[in-house]
Image 1 (tube, rainbow, N blue to C red):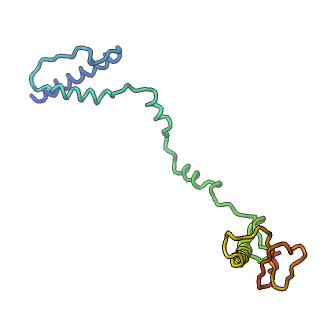
Image 2: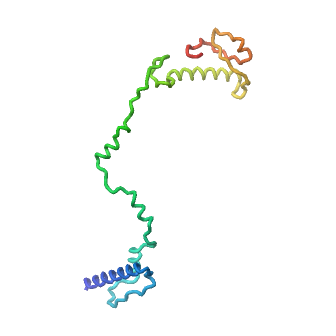
Image 3: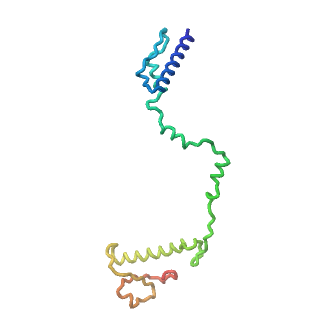
Length: 180
């Protein structure tokens, strides 16, 4: 008896599906057409289950042009491991050998051509910081600087005629050879 009930249920669902497809092909709405009526025992499913099946099979909106666009960018074939390794380890992704490195003429440390040596730059910035500290001590604050040029004089140097109208900052050490 159960096999017969399952067969009737399967046949009824198939007929409902064919009917909805024919109505859809004709351009009619499935809700306006008359429903298929089958007389049979109470083993047949309720109408609620039929509505759930129809909702699952037919989406709320008909399939459109934009649905297929999402599939277009997907890869159709898998790349082989050899091709993937070639792409990952390509020549243009390897580290380049630098040929523009030379020793610094002042200190002998290695540096790139046309770029200041890092060691020499640290020496210059340290001396500049000491000069700025001396200027801040003379002025008494950062916003009290006079509107005139500044000249740095080291030990043993005397101001020239051009330096008379300028602010003079004296450093108690010999002038470094690289600081001119």
